[in-house]
Image (cartoon, rainbow, N blue to C red; front, side, top):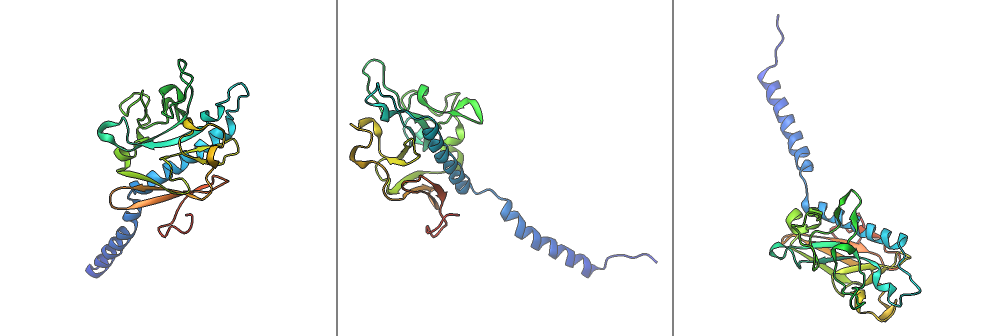
Length: 224
């Protein structure tokens, strides 16, 4: 006598498979907003790392502090003004010995994952997002649908963060400063970087003094 599944057993198996699929498949879908936040968080930490291992102090240059490593967000010089960011260390122009606060191609950090690429999504006066050395994922709008970036709380002076040799976060454009810590431009309150995709948002906190960075929970009260 042959054994076979009854119709009820087959229906039961199909129901179980349906329940499992409904539970597992949504978890497998990508979340562009979350992916963008993880990437930005990683690059904020990398900027801090560069600042700590590459101290720009130079006793022969009174403006040495303007060379500090920084991460800057902008929609300048990108197709359709899309949102991108760049990691760079400013240098003085040979002709005028002045600092622009704008990323030149020679000042941008190399991508550690591919040294033929630069850590920019297209920003500055000499590089745009269709340049062969651009790391396309740093264009947040084209890669993840991020339509705007906001800096709030302790870092509301421009869309950039720099770090000193101790890894302490600094706010604002350093190119116009007259001293290493003019106007006490160390971040004195935790900084919040908000990524917005037009519908939802996600925030990254950069702590004062230590520069420790993390992604905030939806309530904005704790790191996740």
